[in-house]
Length: 373
Image (tube, rainbow, N blue to C red):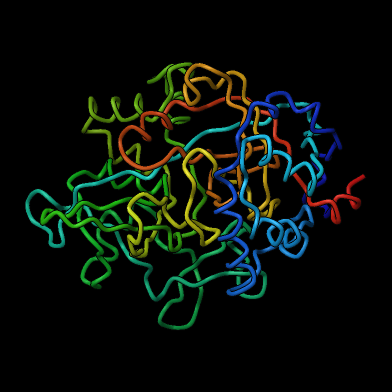
């Protein structure tokens, strides 16, 4: 484990101590694991997080999943019991883990702008470049992984949300489609993907391609700090309602979040499948987790127990095995996750109010687990 992971420890536990494990049905994870296996072996391995778990550590589990077809929830659980050992992620500051949720919105759009459809989704600009320790300017801290390559060869921070909203990218042909609402565009940026319903009936899909590089700043926290929404009432729905009541303040609030997301068009091969996110495989509704990729490596299973989160499981506590298949600017820390609830308005209603303490247990294939005893 590297120094970056020094604020938490992994505590070995047994499956019979995983409260809720005996009631879970992780059967739907196997198709996702097979997709991860193909991505790792046929395309490229996932980046190794600071915890030190690699795609190579994951491969025995994924290989075993290739031909395994669970006959029951118990047989699906038995597969993981045979191949993995569970470790509780325990933060050294004593605080619990925390989950939120995200979804794939469906937005009405037009191929061309007009008086109604005025707010674009942009492709990645060609002067947005990846940054690393070798080319990052001294004035940008290590959180900046994207920057602007200027005409004179210098590298600087890319314009932020306000500058882009005010027209920095106009006239460059980067628009994928135009939406009716600046607020809708903003929340697609937060979610990182969307289904686009064109006015001729076609369905398209966009997914994350890059970002301008500035840190994510939650507008919900801003509204709490300003006394506009009570902390206990904060949700995507309450934020949208506040913005709808205060149209003259929309720009001021949205521009507080300087982060700006660029998209790429993605094929809609299977309308029932989730969007392809950071792990380059389709997300599984209710079973995909966005994690901090600086710490964790995509493809690993996590058992999430959030007893106060009850509206996703018909009033029962949320206790599910999930796959780490995505990441996000706001997902920072060893026990911080974002649950993918699916696509469309109902999924959005489910996702918008998830803000719950949670236990995070990572399942590590047995050959690698010995390094963490």
